Image (cartoon, rainbow, N blue to C red; front, side):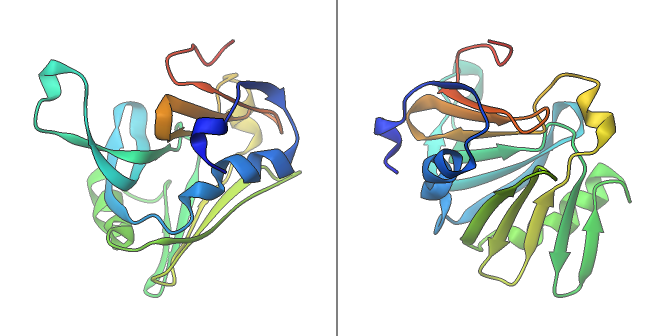
Length: 171
């Protein structure tokens, strides 16, 4: 689905519509993996876009950016499993960099488990796996910043929204 045609959607549980909205990430190359505030793993994919903030002149962000929201994640690689709960951010980031240079082959969200799964062309599988402890904070399990300043936020529960990224998530 072309992101310019994405309309605001609030509190939906329609996974078919969600998959239509996010399917544009398939084929995009992951070019940066790193941690941001609060221990959130971020994947930058697609085109490299300059930040609009003057303090970040010369730095780039992905046209698509996945943030784990602090939710548990797992990365299955040909060399073994990497789990967000097993290591320091520095060590985890080093291992997760295996995704850099690889393209998204498939993306899927499943319920009732609410697991987000990315399959990559380098035979890696990345999953964001919400648990019951994630629901107590009333924050999304994951966020996907998309082209045209749109944001998909999924969770808590099976509900998700898609809206301009400058609108507070709680709306």
